[in-house]
Length: 347
DNA sequence: AAGGCGGGGGA
DNA sequence: TCCCCAGCCTT
Image 1 (tube, rainbow, N blue to C red):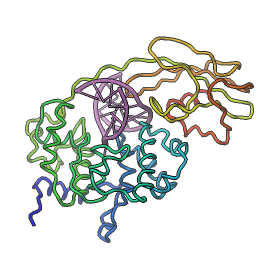
Image 2: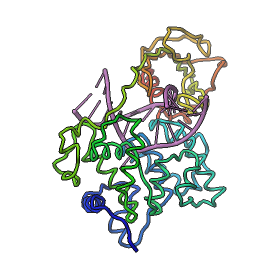
Image 3: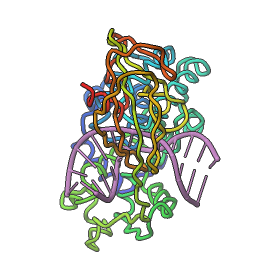
Image 4: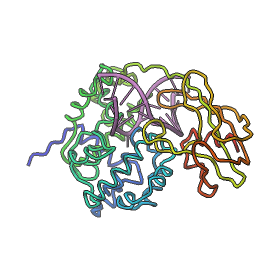
């Protein structure tokens, strides 16, 4: 038996034993001593929620999901609309659609038991290289190279990689591979990400308290904060649009389900125009006395939106698009944030 | 290989 | 304001 464990990994695990942060999906040290293993369903759910999303933003959503759907089979049996509503506000809604797809594959093809290898996990909807590595390491204790934004930053600094991302990604992966031990795999995966999230932060890294400070090339060179370098991104254009919020006398509101593909896919939204850079207009979805409620500003991944909001009360007649949702079945919290902002303008 | 896809918090 | 984030999927 000759297990590999670099000195760096050993030092990091020592640091993690002391500084590991509490998270709802983590098994604490005491429970771990009692042989409690992480629930693969919990690990998978948390990792999908954590894609491009901070721990702070995820916590409440995670608790809400596991309370409402305690096992992956429960989630698999959920209504699509209920899952999309529960995800509302978390963003990147394709994740919620793939989450449901994945739960149904696991329930129906794997008997409700998650596969335990990187290769099998990678084939599931919504699971890419990062998530497959994270779940196989954290939930199943397998050696896997987790490479997310945190690890990329830590590697770029520790080895002082000056080539910019994303071209340097494979270099960073190879460096991360070289440090990854083949025991305590789950702890190491979480430790190196915790290091990036709490010590080796993007703006002003706390090099003075870093467990890897003595050998970090960027700290020694004094340019840690400037790494990793990134190729510049294009500026975001401004798009314009109109949204119509119609309310009936009985309180029902006019909403439409957006197509699965594209922006805010699968979510509810107010009828309205397309969003584009050139000014334009659109006929109201239903005949009514429309009043201008002003403008909502919202920024998406690749553009800024200025959305004119028009509101009508006591609407009669049949809409040409969308359908009226009874007030008791409508909760503003079920809407994506830009749609909720428009609703707030009409209150 | 490149672009689409949310939202919130920090500097 | 800009940047970042426990990325994935499609083209």
